[in-house]
Image (cartoon, rainbow over all chains, first blue to last red):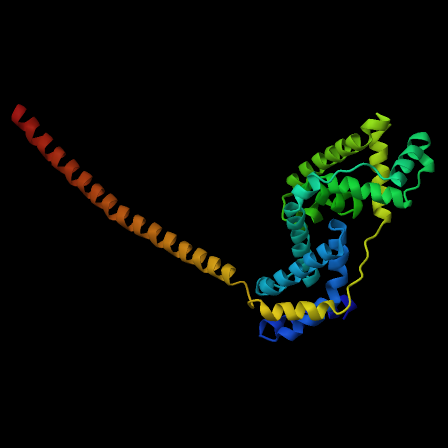
Length: 197
Length: 100
């Protein structure tokens, strides 16, 4: 038996015990999958308190909906679908805050952009200013656009995978991806227009 | 400035920045304590599911009743049409005899 099959079997056994009323059997699942859920939540929320809220919400939903887990796909896939949808709900509920939070670029961000304009190759993607800048742009995007850009461009997932994770149809993912790229371009235009355009 | 290139460069920057998978200390204990306070399963979900089942049963009963109520009428109509047809044929024959 392969390791993954053995793990799946172990998951199924824990789930069965939880469904029979042994709540303590839920803890091994939390311990096993929390790192993945935290990594996903950190893509969408910056503050530690927000990240923890998202992950708590994911586990709470998982526990409450566990009876609807049919076991025809691995538990991890089912959990990640719940996690993605919880992250999307989080983005939607914080949309208003993001729309008003655009501030001036920091000195390192401006420096990085100056370097990029002067000589694009010299501006490293690994610089912390580049990371801050991309974080700023992602925060300016609408929830759907941020979700699509993150899953499609940053995590390099396929359209079909995104459709399964989000519950959107394949054509809807394609349309949202097209709009998200345009939206991102508009945000970059907004950030750079005063100085560079 | 080429915005498309800048966009691609920023996406590459984001790809290189893998999010941390660190879990806060004793996080699972907190989750378990929280779950102990929350209701076990989704009661609303169960209610909604039960209502849907109820609605499906009601709809199928309504459908069966409507079929049942329409079907005898159709038979009656067919019988009426048939008896009328015979009557008309006989009367028509009688009328034609009277004519001659």
